[in-house]
Image (cartoon, rainbow, N blue to C red; front, side, top):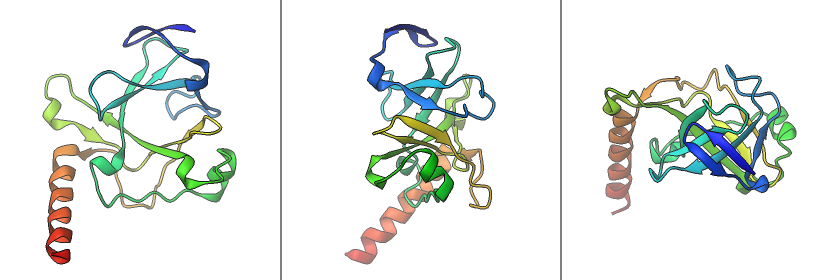
Amino acid sequence: MKVKTKLGEMEIEEDKLITFEEGIPGLEDLRKFVIISNGSDPIMWLVSVEDENVALPVINPWLVRVDYTVDVPKDVTEDLEIDNKDDVQVWAILVIPHDNPENMTINLMAPILVNTKTKKAKQIIMEDSGYGIRHLVKEELERSKKISEKVSADVG
């Protein structure tokens, strides 16, 4: 199907669509999205196929914070029909300031979970996780680098 998006007009295969049955907080009226690359891997785009003005940059959170953890509540596992954790993709939303991309932030408190088998998705809010909605990506990358160096030194 041909869809107009914030990233331009594109052909979207039906089997690539993911459904947020409850919408996304702040975008509750939008249910159908697709995750696409815009040539800026590892940053992907969560693109609405219902509103051409909505496209959110997302990233695998473990690429930014190596020790990131996600607690998936039982009701979410049931809602998304998750049988195998290997069928779940986890994405975190980025905020990239146009005038200063160095100050890009990542929302680690509210990851997006996608069941790759059922194509059902949900943004969960991990209120008591200790994560915030605006972590500076450059600080998280530096922190992760130090963790990785320590692990390498401990193993070596």
